[in-house]
Amino acid sequence: MKKALLVLLLFVTAVIQAQDTSEFKKETIEFIKLTGSGAAFDNAISQIGAMVSDANKEAYQKEANTTLDGLYDKLADLYMTEFTQSEIKELVAFYHTDLGKKLAEKQLSLTQKGMMLGQSWGMELQGIAQKYN
Image 1: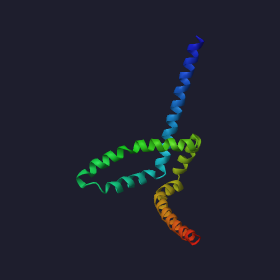
Image 2: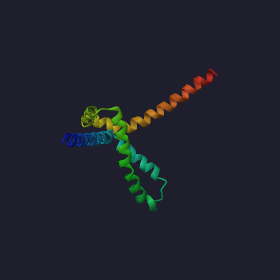
Image 3: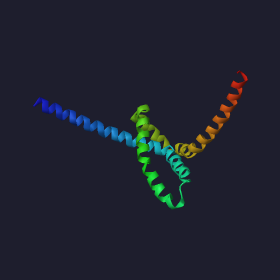
Image 4: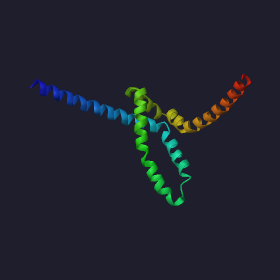
């Protein structure tokens, strides 16, 4: 009887943990989407799809979009190793504010501009390094 009770308790604990993890993952995916990543992914699909013939664009778009769920799932796993469920909830709440929405809207453009600044800076550093060779 004790063994059966122990097995039942372990099973119930595992089910509860799986539900918690599932909810945590859903919240994490919501956070990722709120940050503006969806727009960046859509942009990437469009840019890569520019080389696809017009006759195949619709099929490409459809298949490319099916890859997003897997990408979001993997990104959620990544974020879940760095943030607690409580922290993700706070981030989701932030991205629902006006300031959070503004940040999400501007994030892709800021990232692109920041990458250009970083490239320019890298070239400047290369010039300095060459001076000391």
